[in-house]
Length: 224
Ligand SMILES: [Zn+2]
Ligand SMILES: [Zn+2]
Ligand SMILES: [Zn+2]
Image (cartoon, rainbow, N blue to C red; front, side):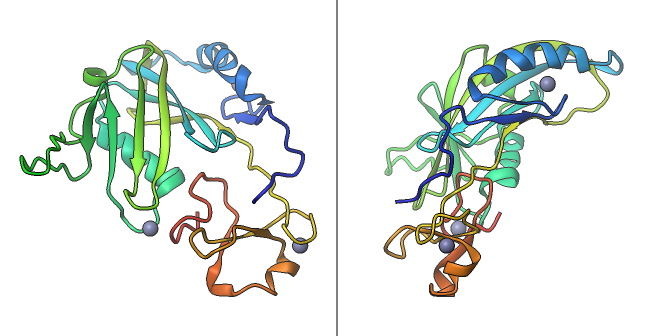
C-alpha cells in the first residue's frame, strides 16, 4: 500500500500560462479564459485541440495540453512518452471509437487484430467531446484516458504541442516512518512501498526507483 501525505482529493495542479495553482476540477474552466488572454494573434491560423489527459487508475496524475490539428497521433504519442512514460521503448497504441492506432501496427489476419498506424492527423480522428485511450507497454501497462475539452481556431507562430497545465507532484508517505518519500519499490518486486532517504538504506537498492511526477513511477525501469 502506498499513501499520499495530505491526501487532499482536489489533486491540485499548476496553470503553465499564469502559474496559478488550482484544483483539478476547476482547471478546464480556468484555462478557457487563461488561454484566450495569453493568445497573441500572429502567425498562421490553425485548429488547436485542447486535451485533458489522466491516468485511468491514478487520478492525481493529469495534464492539459493543446495540440495543432495538423499534427499526427504519433506526435501525441511521442509527447506522452517524453513527459510521462518512456522507460525502454515499449509498444503503445491509442484506441479511438473502437479502432486501434498502434506505433507498430499488427495487421495480421491470423491474430484477429486490425490495427492502424499512428499516421492519421489529430483533426481526422478527434472532435470536440471525443474520449479515447492510450496504452504504453502491453506487459506492465500504463493506461491513460484522454478527452477533447475543446477546439479553437487561432493564429500561432509555431506548430507545437503546448503544455497548459500539470498536476503538482504528489507527496507520498514513507511506509516506515511517515516522512515524505523519495524512493519507491519497483512494482513486481513483492511488497509495494515508498521510502524516505533514511529508510531506503534498509531496502535492497536494486528494487528501488525514484519518486517522480508520473503515473509510471515504480513501473519497469522508469526513472523520470
Ligand atoms: Zn492560468
Ligand atoms: Zn520498460
Ligand atoms: Zn522513512
